[in-house]
Image (cartoon, rainbow, N blue to C red):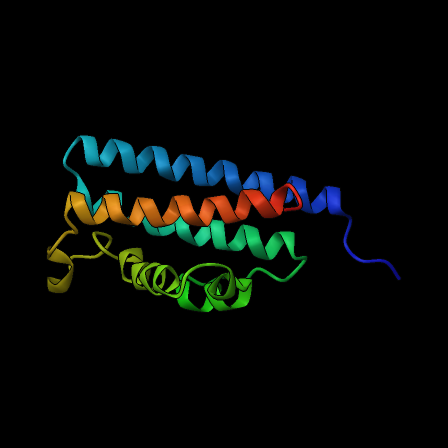
Length: 136
């Protein structure tokens, strides 16, 4: 019995990556307009989808979860990224609900600088994804 078709996995990964691009466009628009809570939400969504791309490329099941720490461990990103980067990415899990619900703890939006730092982490994760996508 053979494993998953590499071309099918690649095609699925590219579909996920197109959604990551959508999220990153929303981040840019949110930051430009000073809408930092929605921008932070889309940062978390992009991170989540990038981690799920790693799972797709590995032929693993993609769980329906927003828990970035769990996804980091499942995808093996904790072994491929510097520990501090993996920890910082995991901390973005809380951004999955920021601004979605009118909870008092969600009234504090991340700063533009925090979003910029999170985008730096996303670029690191995206580099890992693209390397795996090309077989590197």
